[in-house]
Image (tube, rainbow, N blue to C red):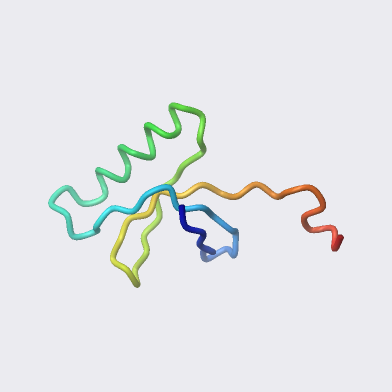
Amino acid sequence: MTSVTGARNAPRTVLQGFPAGGPRGSLPAEEFARAQRAEGTPAEVVMDLDRDLFLVVVARQAGPGAGTGA
């Protein structure tokens, strides 16, 4: 898994990437994200314009003490 920071600076973990130039467009990524959501993982699809990929990502949960300066 790869970590990325999105436009809103929310740290996210990439579950899988799919080529944007594929014949089915974003559909494979959307199907994968839907399957992840069915299993309880709050996955969403985002576009990585630099790498020309659809990424299925989940927001990383803040750990204990996150944001407290500790």
